[in-house]
Image (spheres, rainbow, N blue to C red):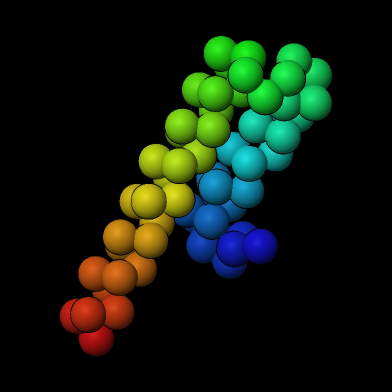
Length: 57
């Protein structure tokens, strides 16, 4: 869990949303897939920011 940062909180919320959608409608439901893609984007942004910050310090 990465809830110590605002982006981490956003990631956790999106992850929960995706899990709830998957349980309710299935993994291949368009809303579940969309939430998964949004989660991927958030995670990629988070990791890129972490990597950039680490290389600066």
